[in-house]
Length: 605
Image (cartoon, rainbow, N blue to C red):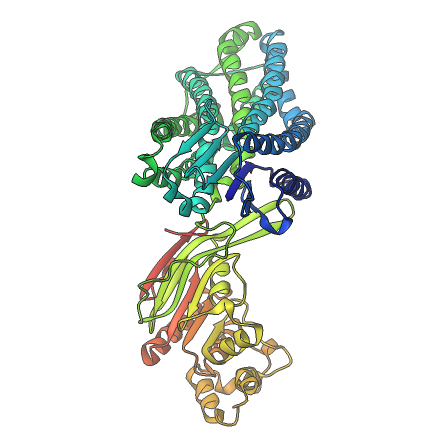
């Protein structure tokens, strides 16, 4: 008997997450009478996954299954209530929100003394309602999968649906059980996430539509300095509030794209032919996601337009500005805009908070066919021409309470003799990918095949030997030893390998080849940036590597020196046909390579 479970968690509370995992494991141990060794748990992105495996002495009853699920729910709900209290407290004590809301109220009071009260009441109401909305979503995140061998069925609990239990009579699907768990966890998530998200987008769309119309035509300012100053601050705060949503479309669309994987899996004939209810559910979610993408596009366009109009409201070069002498006349003219703008502030704050709850981690979710077992990525049909192949490479880093999803399932093949440039903006994951490919860093999951061998299955000494004999490295910051002169820095790899005597002539040739033979006895502190990088290139080539890794080789150089260094690297490649993998964010530098690979947010585009 195998069973799998998943539930939503808050990544920002790692200590509570660890305690929760232990409690749930203990629940499974007691309820199913299985040893701890047969229970596994894994925190993956914003989900906690658990799995059990046992040979039952007697068949599991439906009552026992429900009892087990209810035990898990009790601890999950306590955890969610605790999260809810913390979220309410954080929102209540949000100093930035208090200060910006006060600026809005100061201006609203000048227009109508009742407006600040209405604004304050509405803001408090929606902000206090949001944690409860999130709590209800979390409570419906539990899923379970049970393989019932004696009944030749698979039982699914998807808490997001009204009829939570689904039965699949195709027993052969048991082989897909572990592969199914993250897909069904996300399917269930979309069932509970899509409707509230659409509602928040519709509310925002409606306010933006009305405000967009209200900002057309003549713009106004008032002669009274005190009121004008408050008006200008009011406009500035609203513009800033909208600018905080500038990545709205990217964040939500990245989350919505995740639906493709569970949709693809659930549309498999062996799945849908035995579970028609889920087939209908998948179709309904797909339709809503299409709605969401269309709505998101509309909201983003209106948001950008309104932000620009608010920012430039008092710009006389772009708008017709009319100065009002009478305070009463100004109040009357601005009443509608003030009401709409206060509504905009509230909806923008709600949408931003909603994005904060999901946008830090979920967009970077990666699906895995084997969450618990040791996963071997598909390495079939690899070409013998490949010197290096990467499969399903994933790597995360924890920075305090934040997780950086550096690599999210990278597949890449590099053939012998290729010159490849990996291009991407800062933070795209380029250096992490290079370090994992060179064995300098260990991926969380995935495989790097170098010369047909899994690089990360080698022990440390074997890895070091491979890097020393087969790989060369050029770093952005040169990485020269300050107390070694030029010749000594270049000779170092040969000395470490134990054949510096054999390569004595080669080292002199390298010094001449890269144009630093006259600086052979000088130390790094006496060299220019371009000269230091030439030393680094010569050192990288000392042991005749079969692959060269270059991480931003021109990053610390001026454009002219950078060009000279790249000509040197290009010339070396053409002469020796050594494989080169270069990291860069500059298009001009990437053009020196035979092939360019674009990396964005840890994924190859």
